[in-house]
Length: 196
Image (cartoon, rainbow, N blue to C red):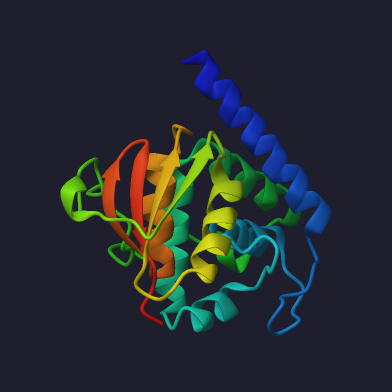
């Protein structure tokens, strides 16, 4: 248990350093300066290299901004590293319009993504495979997003991810971004690309 807490502390520290260094960067779409909360959302969505505000992120995904924010906040509540970075951003920036809790019942995030949900292993024939090793948090979804962008619409990527948080991060990222998790038996996950 202590080793898992140590890893969460290291991840939280890395996130906080990134947020401190990059706070104020412009949204890549509208140019608005991003607060640390918006940057954390961008990292969680795999947009660390192309950070954008929550309004632009929702528009890119053709989704509802408030629902996206609720999903992100729900995921933050279940991950120690994200929660610590969120709290740090709140202390640094004081009151933030994004720090308000989501309305009850608006989040799509739930815990029904457990192992084995989706297609059976026999039905999952990947178009490509990727061994992410023990890559964690933002790095995992950033690299996954980049890989999915190079794949054909509807194609399947079989991901091997050994980080303990992957079983929460990958399903949540898929729900928030519109990709489809079709197989989840940690450490193996099948992610289907958007049809575009």
